[in-house]
Length: 445
Image (cartoon, rainbow, N blue to C red; front, side, top):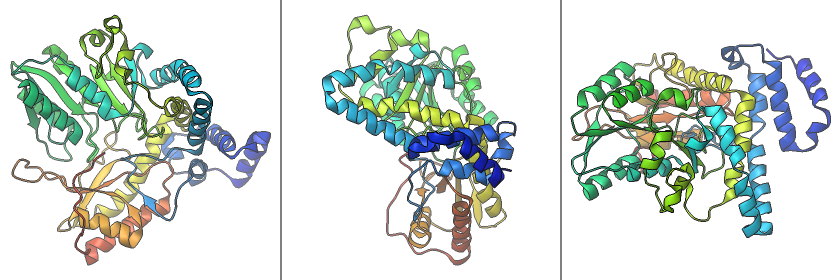
């Protein structure tokens, strides 16, 4: 563990770097990382003195407990200040500076490619995962009768997009059902059994936005390729959440929201397109034919705020300063803290796997006999906890229940906040909750 004397020594070493609060925070973060460099991520995950340094890098409202980071995460102070700086620069003479910033975004592209494992000419910078995936969904050439296999627990916007193509182009969309939690073997077998001679696309999540169910992406990609099927992977909740390299997944397309676990400004995403697929995929908006082989054709959306995109570089640097392994270990530590405290309660049902390598900072929990929407309202009204209620698996179309609260802490979440959630759940299980006056459905993110 850190000692206070060791920390003060590091503070002196930082010296004049503490002139600005944001840059001082970044320097302190790097110093804190250097001080724990010889320790395992699992060990550092339990070091509250280290994580206090991370928490200090954010401007938060601690009168509320944010356990809905799966929707959109706050950015650290250094990212906010970078966004403002680029906005000020752009505003001086937009037609000049906006283009200037845009030309320098290759640095951001290169950094993302190196960190997350793909070539920089295989990535398009987008506004979110939905845009990334819809580029693919609407850009694939599919004929009437061609089949897309997806799941009932994929993101609603993506299911809606396939349904529109079904109505417009007369394709077939098959939605697989599966229990939660389940195993990667079970998911693989469900996809394998569903293949028909008309199957052209597998579309599935890396981890679902509902329960954090992990899919065997590489195995499914290899299965698909062996049958001439393309793979579209929703990675909205995976990038910067736990460590992996996209190239190791062997999928054809991968869509990401960077304003989630990377902590980038809202309105940032990326689309990975396997190199040989770039010429075959139509962009969302029209481009000249000469751009057919250029991945940047998928960025053609007209004028957009370059400032928020440039600030992704600071978000990436912040992520790297913590370290992907440490971050994942901390998220898992926070999840296991509440899950282990609640799992022995006979009324509590945990709908996410707690096995190693299966769950990090996104998991679902419910209470038998308690409506999840009423439970979420109770959390806000009595404990000031912001959390997302999910209502899924409802008949007649679905047979596997996945109704509960999606719990998504982040690196700035304190143990006290986690323990308050545990207390609230125990209170609700013992004493019940008032009926909900809201009509929230399954998560929008």
